[in-house]
Length: 342
Image (cartoon, rainbow, N blue to C red; front, side, top):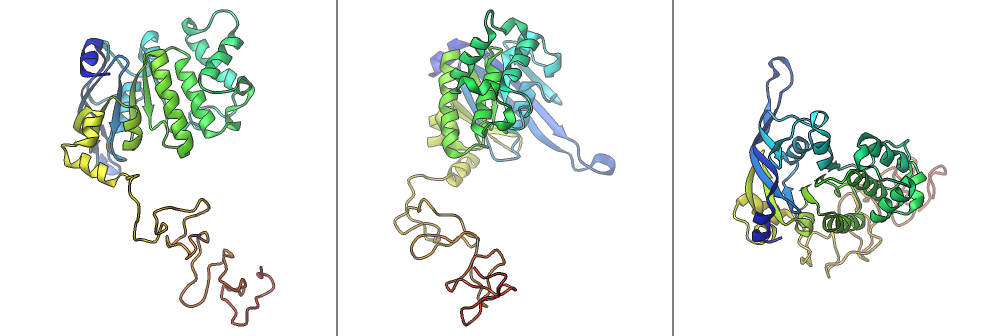
């Protein structure tokens, strides 16, 4: 979406001068702090705004205010000009209009409920969005749109993988036909390969359902893949905002530049800290060791390093002769205490 299209689309979400403070602890409630300090942002129809920052920057607090899970201390949150209060007090149409996908897909679902029951509960709460006719067929179509087999409907959420749980969470949100999806670190708890799949799914759903998104993430690489614009938060304020390509390729604020410098550069090759091979590659079977070093052949031994005094940890990771004493020391003659010999 270019700037002209964005202006013509009209504002969907409008956050103005949002402020949230958390009280301190102890007598007198000292030590309170402002988690969000005067944040303003907008999201237009069918646009994805990436809200990025390090942990503690306040981005999740903004997301919770937009979703109605937290009341701001000051400021306004409106949807097409209508105030958005707490989720339980919103009119049903605004409850449906703004839905949230949480960071931890497992904890966001009841592990004892089947997927069919989870979706049926949503349709029961908002019957206007419930399909007419065969609900089983409609459920299967909904799951297929998330890349899930129909048989998943009869399985309990606790029996699903993390990626499957997140797909079900997205299906639950889309079951009420929202217009704005708030994604709070929606892929950060997933394996890298699954992250890519969920990002592709969200991008596809955005086009198919004409969704707007507020996408919260600490990962600049993830935001670059999905966001039209990006707002960078630090210590409760937005320090930079603009088109994603412009912000990430020519950042103006020092904090944004620091985030980019700290991000993994996939074009890097050789590092001199012995964590990778000389050619910049890593073996498929490598596992990080406590001291971060690798063997001469490029492999690693888990989490054990032989101590200078000839001892090894009690986890059974052994030096060259393969034997250890009961107290973890290596015998000079190559033999070992019987109960710990390997």
